[in-house]
Image 1 (cartoon, helix red, strand yellow):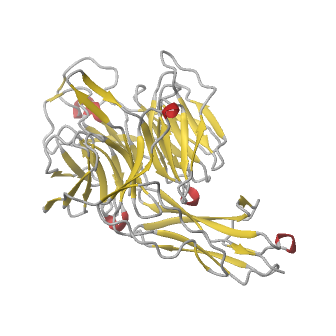
Image 2: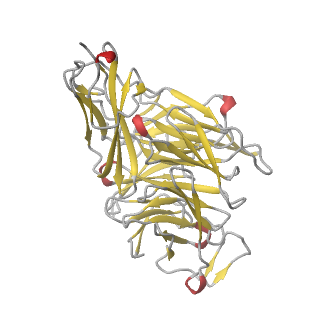
Image 3: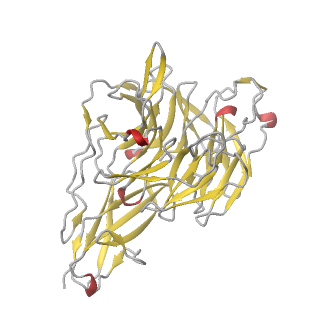
Length: 463
């Protein structure tokens, strides 16, 4: 295994450059953009003081937008391809002992909306691209949902951290819960302390085998749940220890790689793990000691990217196990949850910490990104004459290196969605003369069911 450590990268701290949206008879949404250099960091969004609080759930969504959740600020945020940021307030919830909902993870759903977990409010939320929020209470009280991901069955799946369960919610909001079985003889010989959440679920992802996979930090195991609700689990250590320190965060994030395996972070062991669908584990040491790898996400070209919570670095691992680390420009940045954007960069959250003799102080979370050197990996295009009565065609260019599972389209007139115009082709009528028509292509990739979206350049409709 080859290990590289990168230092001295050029850094850029600026609002994300606006993507040019031109009016042309045909063409992609932007001219070929210069790729952000590999390992080059950009600070994208620093919230105002009134919206302070940790940032979680950084996720790509339809139309090339990036979404994020502000835990204690009770807000869901959206960043457009042009860099415009808008936050939507999350209200109307009830909690016990806190004044905030605990907005955590987000996922793009098959219905064109974003879905999220509210840990303390004990609900699953849905937010439309325009910011309309609907919530669905979880039947089990105080279940504390954390991770959420789209499933191969067209539903969303989520973990219930303190209920020892996995939940499934349909796009219509119907929730079903599945209890995680006791570990029994296959579990650790000794649990170091009494704890209610021995088999709790944490982060969840779609797997390469048509099932959902999730981490169980307190049990040092990875679980698998079929779309029918059957649950099994596997130890993450090649030699399972006799004693498990409960809540030791032995495993954290998990995702599926292009190689057909599951990839996960081993926080206490300072490793990235790879698990086959049969449960066989291979471990890769991170060069920086005690880095606390937390979350992991698929990156362009087949590599995977992970955050190092304790050492403020972002790491990249190839499917062969080669690791490269990139220190963030600011010390104590504490990088967290991240995702690949349609621009080809890895977007992630930061929760800066300042440590003095008096203790540690946390500052408002922010959004940053790191270049992969790939440039835009998904761009949409409208082709046609632009004449009323003449059909237009929406196409896309995909350079992610990921396998495509499905594609959906949406046509827009003057920036607003055209009702019912969700096919690849669209024929504008004479009433559209003078308006600008664009299309969005939303591509879902297998096996992790990651979704990227792109919006085309506008085409002026003529008679």
